[in-house]
Image (cartoon, rainbow, N blue to C red; front, side, top):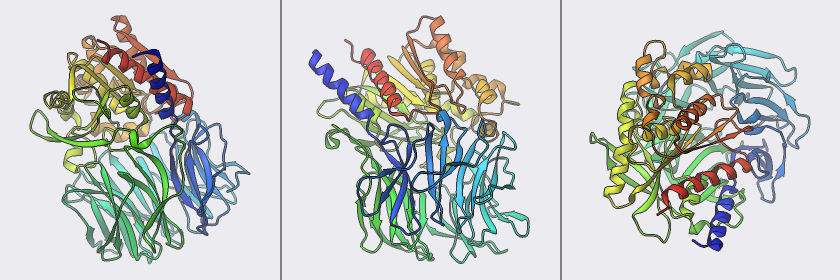
Length: 606
């Protein structure tokens, strides 16, 4: 490739890394405006836009990255969750809708705080925090006028208030028992009592619980007594009658939103990672219509207070994430925000293709192939593993994938056992000692693509972030003959040090998933790549955020030190202003440029 072509490719990578996104839509009470979060300025901040359209106005210019925003039902405040340094010690502030009068509600420092919900009158804000105990994300209520904070419930591990009644007297609280199993509790603040609404034989999940308008029922997503999650209605009386409203044999329900008045709901189905949006009648659950989407993914749905409009985030493998508005009366869908994508022609990007194959033991697996447009297989290929581990690879817009495609490198993103979206049985197939089979799925995936003539043997890479970083290091250690290079993004390498240094509440909910450090130390050692790094031969790129308290930076340091001692080529990039992931534009550019150059160096050389 000559110098002119190299310059063009470098510019393409730069432009792709600058592609922005919008999320966390929240209507003003009158439905005329929308607050949302966008990285339009280079760092995620709060913006405001009129529903009639136009250019958005900046609301915040915090030093911190913003995670989420919620407009008060009273209209006078925005609640903002921000992450100092990108870390997990998120804090909650109030700002006026025009951006002034910032008030910090939480204690700051190392406490973790999550926005939950406003009360319907806007007098109180409910949030989760470990301010009292590091290993417990408890439920709190703060009075907006006085600033008085009251602890409502202790939640061992993690807890989130998912909904509150109109009078503020009853709450639906989701508590995670362990990853893959949780319960919903009904808290009566007036009578000072609570009860479990979802007794079950574990594992089972119960998510996004919402009170019905007249409050004798709760709607929620659950896989109790079945494999695939569905929409359910639960009576809140003593009889606790349970009814399935919508279920499918080929898809899991992943999200729903109820129109004010309870006559309508929008529901989202997950089919191997791709989404379908439907409107259904309530309370009977009958399907009314299916909404054609411009992209493969829809999430973060919010109805306006009058029920006339539904805001949602839509994205796809060739569509950056933006906020779209569905007119409920006409069922017309229009794009409200337009994230920056200067110089990027979306129609020329690589689309995701779903592939199905089998693991070493015959278990059906799936994955998404991103093939370089206008090139013929077999391709130099990077295998990309998602985080979680109970995450899911989906056909979302990935600027790093598209940047690799611009260099002629294909990406295959599998959903190995333990991934979500494919049923309760599948997501629990990597718990504890079963993780050895998930590691074997790495090799099964590689051999499938080679045998299918898609991936070019000898020119294969592996990468992933968080748990995907764990799978990267496991793949490099267990199958050194398969990979020519690897990129470990903020991944776990040593389960014992992970449990010692991660957030205490993360420890509480992760012992079934990974193994109990108090009683299963030998298993954790056997599963930890740190003890097999002597087998790693492939050059390895390591990227990490200095403020990461989910996967602490010591995990990266162990990898770098061990490989350098053996003279394995390794490059280490530490971002001082990031936590678990890279969201500031300059860091996105630096990370994706490094990843693309790394794999180009080792996969494209003759």
